[in-house]
Length: 208
Length: 97
Image 1 (tube, each protein chain N blue to C red):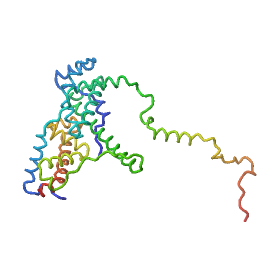
Image 2 (image 1 turned 30 degrees about the horizontal axis):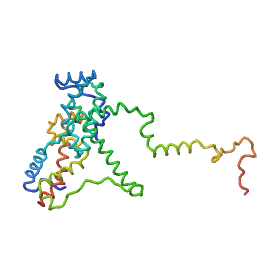
Image 3 (image 1 turned 90 degrees about the horizontal axis):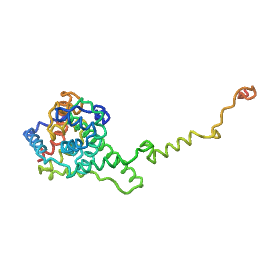
Image 4 (image 1 turned 180 degrees about the vertical axis):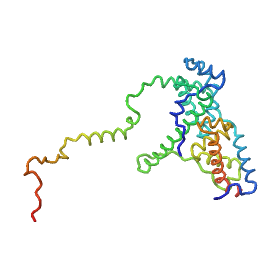
């Protein structure tokens, strides 16, 4: 299943500010005010970074993608029409960019494996470690780590919905706005995500 | 299909785990994030736009395109045109019975 909100779509519908402050900020940004851009970055950097980090689980990648998001905002703010709030737009960009980054990373990993298999290169990108030993699962932290690993393996839309709900603590309607879908669809995504995750985690819980 | 909630106390364990997920310390970007964004913007402004599309700047694609052009631009020596049947003697003769 592919993520139904590609970056192009996210960029095609830049947002409207939710309140007066955001509206003024956007107006200043569209006039090319660098101080307004600084305000925007300082105001939203934590939100964007946290969202990207929760999808990529790497500080280095999160930093890179968060920077990319703000560069994108700087370059496309002129096309801002106001169909969503500034915050929603940033969530859209952050999730789209993060997923795009992950797809590129997976492609690179496959290519590295292929070239090492053919003997063109001796280095491969390391796979994330798997701590699935039953003894280790007794630890709460390990259980959490296992949950995060399984969240990372969910289909893209379910992963975004789950992360926005349970890590960023967004409301259903806010998630629906980010994913450009209905609240019912978000409920369905979250139900499927929870079901899959509990299926994967249940044997570990029973074992513990 | 296995029911993940069949285990007694499973709901409580699941809720505890979600609570743990929520209580994770919120990651934050390193200090001077704005300065790094600015540096990236400046670097992008300084870099001229490439005159070739991205896919064509990859050696594998460029080589493939080169081979395709070579294959398409043969001088006709390899594939001769079929003779025209303007003269009756040039027509293929049937086998004798």
